[in-house]
Image 1 (cartoon, rainbow, N blue to C red):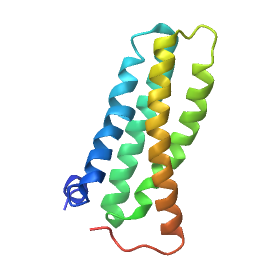
Image 2: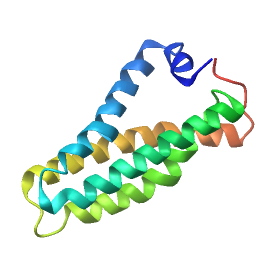
Image 3: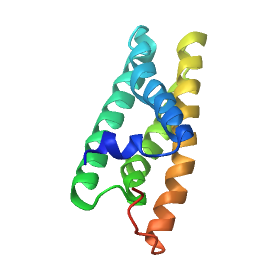
Length: 131
């Protein structure tokens, strides 16, 4: 089974959430490349999201569809959110890139809330594959 098949077996709301996550963490950062003041934020967000995706795939290949899949998000997106917070408060940042950064941070932070719970549950012993 591949990761996409495992995700498709989850409840409908998980699939809907994963589409929002894809839009917020992988598509929306491309919009930040439009404005010069937000290009660095866009590049950093895209890089952290792509690296996290590769790491999630690696963990899935190694141990399956388990709650530990949220760990790469924690390691990469927490520093990304800190960076984005600093970037959006810069004086040269206009309102539209700032709004996009807030949208991206909102989606990432919601994902981080799920990921924190999942990783803690995995650390505490809940290691049964989800599918």
